Length: 143
Picture 1 (tube, rainbow, N blue to C red):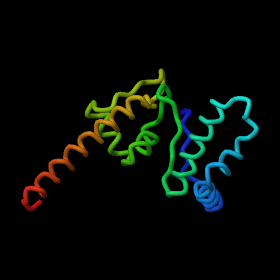
Picture 2 (picture 1 turned 180 degrees about the vertical axis):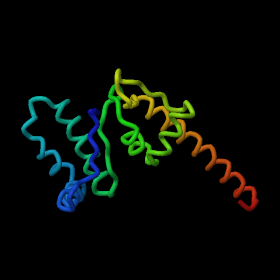
Picture 3 (picture 1 turned 90 degrees about the vertical axis):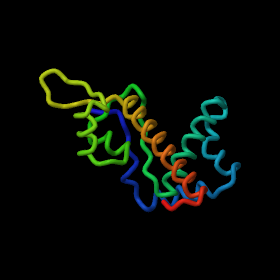
């Protein structure tokens, strides 16, 4: 259904290689893409993406690659948002997360751009709550 790639089933060997890559100096990392010397812009983009992927893997995070035009299932939306599938179902039912319909199907595709919007909204609310708590603590009040 989706064109989303979840990097959540990565072997310990790959994670160790990622840690080694991240620890290497810039010159050593650039050697990985020496074959692309005739296209420096593409080479730098690929290097930056590879470095970010490997940093995330080395840190134990589970990167996700997709495009904003792609659609994901409710289970994949839950994985992106780091919430349960049931919570995504509630957000759909409450109208907070729009979804589409496939003709003759019960599948509910969700646009990644809508998942990103919801994630940003949740992040803003979390930051606002954190700021309020910090202000209370700074004012000497118990939280």
